[in-house]
Image 1: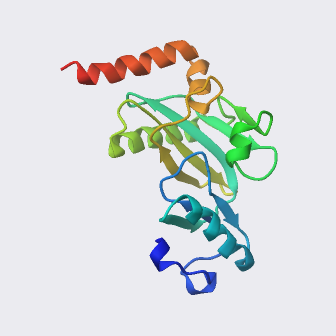
Image 2 (image 1 turned 60 degrees about the vertical axis):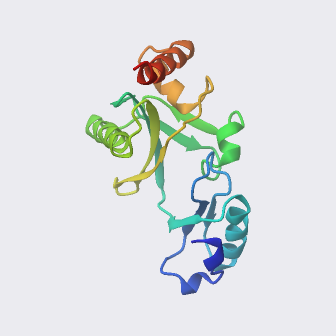
Length: 189
């Protein structure tokens, strides 16, 4: 939805509730709202339009959330993100103790392998050849959804991608050096 075509009446739109309203190109879940009833919709639009003039409004899917980092086309182990309360919003991402992050995720190997394969395919299709992170959801029936591709994932020692790298023996300093080396290689002709 674009700001100039804003429609505050959710009943006039081709979607069902609950839904997710978020800025089109933002990061860290800033401006993201899960809308559970029509009364919350206008407030969610106000919040998202505060950050950007174009929004994504999509079906809300309840389930377990996962993320898969990819470095040079190769997927890292799957990490599961379980917020203590609510969803994995800005507060739960950056306030210590607000989410439990488990890597490798407790998943059947075939599900984990499929998720890693999809993350590699997403990176390839979008052209994310240095590093990226794709987020996934498994609903209550174990149907997998790709939520989004993160083209510039967080890079603090406690961010998801560095946690995944640590599981395969790449510490934070090594990871940073590796990503710099990959990037420099592109420009050394």
